[in-house]
Image (cartoon, rainbow, N blue to C red):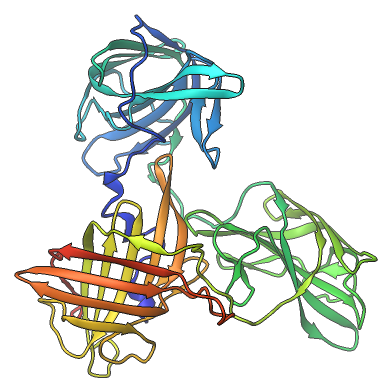
Length: 513
């Protein structure tokens, strides 16, 4: 039941500090380009209508335009940048009247003034900025941000769509003008009239497989039923059932001759008809899938599926004992799913593998205790249960601990040891699932554009925590261990160490909820 009290991975963990992090790669006050009378922005790139997100009576319009060709940079190839020297990409974030039709949003005409705070007919200086290609040498470019300290943005409707003129002063004190003329098409992300997400993948997939496992799922006198799980990542979790972190799994539900090898050509069968040489078609079971299907876990650890209903699977047994697998499949939404692979098919192991993704020790420097919760005798054994969250801009440490006594007015001081015994003065060990983390765990995020994604995760399974108090200030010291040595005791676990001193927030009392 503890899982009911802790957020999903992309939930409240990062909320306390997301406002402190920048929103663009290298988004610092870099030197401004030479003054120009006007920058002609004539290429529309993308746009989103967020609607009245904050329920304040005005809506958020976000769009991107450029003066030339753009491309992607960064380790994940997820930052837009102008490709040619002297060219710009301009990001607009405007607050204006709510569109009458959220399915066809229109940026309102008017003058928008710079404002650090949300208000009607203003633009956000954090999300409204430009990037310029200052210099290009061969395939390498020097990209700089141009930030704004003052100015106005004019929006007019024209026969060609829009005329948007930004008369701004950069943080370096340089007056600049950016002019865009053309269409602006905004994707509706307002949520107005939106149906529930059906969790379908809704995309063509060409998957680069890394690992394949096999399990003899059932058998009778007429056939053997094998489940092949094909992953595009080397790390798998939950007893070999899911990718560990973002990735894909193609699950093939195959029927072979009794006692035969998995090598062969398989075509889609029909439901409730089991015979060698077919794969069982995928079927929806609520928002998840059974039979032959593909599962996708994204950077937010959200899972999506598609059910495979047509196509061919070819499996060849090679002379060196490896197998070659080729999938050319179609899902129930009309999208293709393709994959090919050669390697050793592993027998599915029920051995629980380490869930941590850490590769080295962590020395965490929390900036605040963002959450403190009191659950009373949640375990029903006379103990008192608490939960706290320590965080900085990109790291979060969730700690669930049990004291011998306590109240909702203070944290009990003392030393706690990680243990699953549910006894006083213990920290409850954690686990990392394919879509959540609970209850004691460490998460490090990375920023990608305006979004944050889990980069490293570790369940807390060992170590200690000490809480002390002096004059209303708490000091929390911790030296925790992950599960890196779970299946090999000769290895050393990674440590998550650190300390924090400060005032805790008001403790939330959940005993009456």
